[in-house]
Image (cartoon, rainbow, N blue to C red):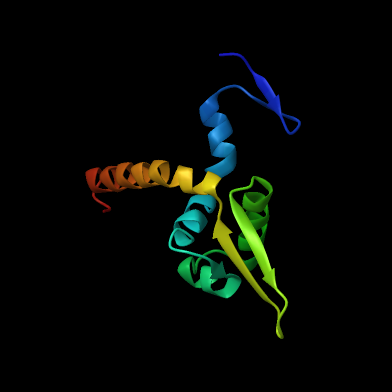
Length: 113
């Protein structure tokens, strides 16, 4: 395969490019948490209690920059912010579901499921 450049980064295959969008420890759990609708930061944090505030904030920004989620600010007192999936992220959910099934099977295979 040939290499290609996007956002000043060289990618060598489509999997590497896809993982830049949804890969890592936290992005997929965040996307899964948002699959049923928009959530506020505190509610999202409750769905992933073992993530630090700094990491959640960083991952939300990265997902927003990759157009995987939107951040909606409501001008209220106090201000309210909600995060929700974009159409681009909705397309990734079946892939995430397959990875979840595969990971579950691997865990069962080694006796930790």
